[in-house]
Length: 126
Image 1 (tube, rainbow, N blue to C red):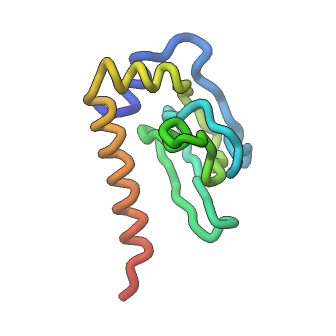
Image 2: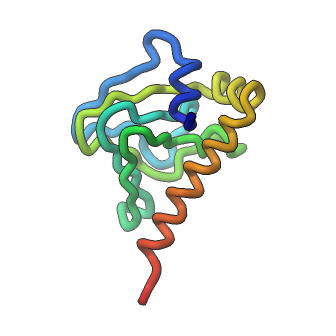
Image 3: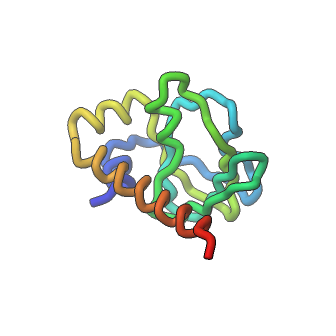
């Protein structure tokens, strides 16, 4: 089981959205009230005026940072690279998942750590 499986288990009808290629999912500086799981497609996260970016694939989750920081702000842009189906988890369900399923928090941390390691490998010099 991974973080997306937990989001899927807690989802109800209407929490899946479809996003078209090139469509902005969220913008840096916006308030963030939800996180996303990628059911289908590919999303690009970018920051620092697009000088840094990361691709999120089907099976991955993103956007949780806005749920856990005190100001609940987005620190980057998220844009669909391909047609996407995204599962949306609001803050209330996120907090419920963390309380009721501590493994969700561990799965989420594992996912974030794996993404961070990939980014660090990309920036390693020499």
